[in-house]
Image (cartoon, helix red, strand yellow):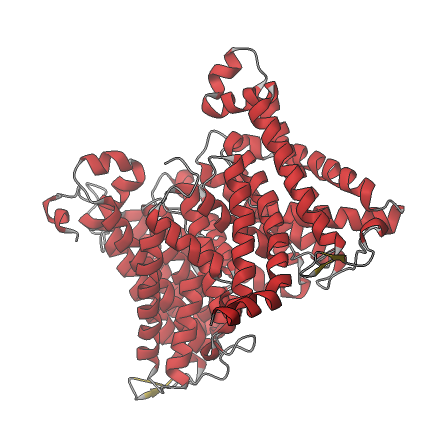
Length: 295
Length: 333
């Protein structure tokens, strides 16, 4: 029985690693959502669309301008982040005084517009995007399995990016302002900190994180207009499970749930698309504030 | 569960004093006039417009009214109402086609499955408020979508096709569009009046109190969670009825109706018509369904236009059509 299980697990290891790669995207996206929500009190429904735009910008840079993967990894988040600044200044900032639900509705509308525009421009079928040469060689032999280099890189990049975000928010002066403004924006403003600008930049940073994840995803998934919308709903469930109180919490939850999803694919594939939602329901019944959340 | 409701003396709901005569069913005067207009449109409509279009419109209008019961009167934004609408459609189609139930029973079966799904998902979702509530309902609906994608009885990508409309009460064939229309109009009217009855009942007044100030409602001794769950279940059941009716009208139940985009569409209809107004959701459904009808040839542009309407409504037009017209005429619609 146990040997059976181990055998099954060995066969399924690639799935589990694939789960870890999915987990990397859950972690990066839920991190961005949490950063934005902490500061702006807005759930950014357009996050999935911005993730998709990140992937498309990388594709456009390569195919229209001839700029490759590595510069795109920096350029695409900057471009999409700048777009985020425009969105925040012209629309989202008008809603801070209203019920938070309006922010959700507005960004949902924005997501529809962005997705629709890309569907008109590029059709619904995916566009290929090759991984960079450095990472496209033969798979790495880990002893128990072969792992494509690029997948390894995605997990590593996501971990580094999450740690960097954590350090910025928890250990720097800017992060201290940010955390203070989350607690009491009026007081921080009274101390002479430009809170509205900070909110704009926070939104831009969260959006840039989504675009960064999008560029990472481009070589794995085909670049297509729908790549963000179903992902973002899963990420919402991840956010509910983790609670948005802590940065490390959302990162851990993201990776953990990716792993669980991978394991489910091995042992009970029929449930792999629903397992995260089931976990969400269980967590809500047992601990409504989420695993790392404050009530 | 709702034991406290009997102790609660509701204020007389929105009646204009000094203007007797025109005050039907708890409506105020403007609402009574609007209701009479609605009745007239229901009666004359099928002779002027294409009945199938009107039936589609009425199904969505009922769906939007059911959704509005939650967002407008309890203040809960459900982003997962497609699960009740779509599941209601699947079950009604299955009941009519495989079990051979008569149409009225098939529609009731759709409503029943909506109610069951509503109790379960509501029980989970009401543990959180505001934005979290929206995200949880959305995630639960996505789960239902995946279940529908895989479950054998839904037919996966094909859906359940060629569902017979059957005979109403076993007597009247619903195959002619006009016969079907009267059933759909009846279902819509019954649902609309039921919702109106709910929001003007003492129970509905407690719901409004929860929307206005939940901690205060709790401090007054109301079991807020029970009220929310009952309202959620009622809304889900009516959404299931709407979905079941739509499945019978078109003879098909598909994944489109359980997809998250459908949840977004009903939010849009209600927002355009006016959140928390009695007639707003009907107007909003009329606007959005007609728009989809006339713009169908533009394909993905419909999504873009819907997105633009969303943005415009949130930024500049939050009261919706009924709200703005009401403000202009100084009445409540």
